[in-house]
Image (cartoon, rainbow, N blue to C red; front, side, top):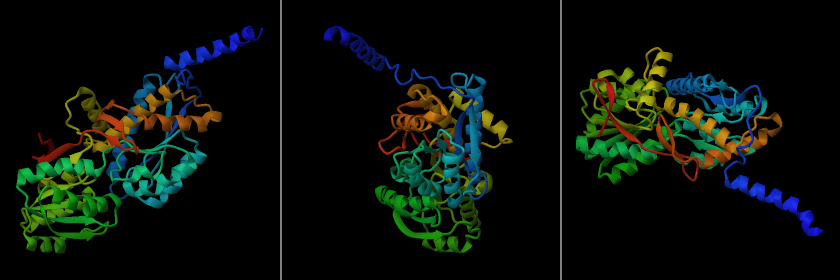
Length: 390
């Protein structure tokens, strides 16, 4: 009698095991509801706003494409986004607002490393995933198990560019200019460039610092000129980088420039003009990539932004949305209000285990701390546009 009574339970257990083996759990659960809420933090005003503008454009394009194709199981995505004005304090308040009042499934953003540095430690308390599409200062994703960055950190990007820069310009001695008031710029100028100079046998003559919003670099360049360097390493965003380059060329300084993540933007060329010619940098997504899906995306961004060419933040933000779709489907997110906590845990699991996602920014895999692993592309400015250095 005992054995016969056990048969139904045995059958249930066997069925559960088979479902797990066939990959039908937890994805057998179907998303439902009127809409899936995704939060966004984009700095569309303030210093470096172009990164936020292109990030928002990439996100919106992806959501429109997915919704036009039927959403996820017929449920559309909806973006609730805020401008944190490229400042750290608003990013904290707005992240909390998205998590607690708006009750979004997860957050895409913030962009800049300074904002990530203050938002990421809060994620453990709020228990919500945040994925930055353009923060590149090393070490920030380790601040929380809920923090991820679908991009390449500066150390991965700069080393690729440095090899080409030293070889092309025969750089033997150089100076560094960096913004000491910005997280990623300080990381590049103080921590990364000196190490890479040493690695590639470049003598560091001096390091000079400035603050966000500096417009007049005449005194800086006069001092640099007196040192007679072969090259100048820039740790800043593109506005300051362009000002440095214009002043250097104005004073007749012919040293070759190299810069980091935020500096290597199409807007550097727009603001720097001919002074940016010959600049070497690298990127976590190449807008001239000939793959059809990449060029289709670039065309949509250009149309949406009035003819402006996107930086890699737009590419990575676009990919973020398609990765979110993939995780929702594979992890069995239900989108029921009562399951929000469990759904957020599923998003965390999905991002942590992401492998070989093929997007417009290339192949993306998350490493053990939640940073993207992929290919950095070395670029040089020639004839007013970025070209890939083969």
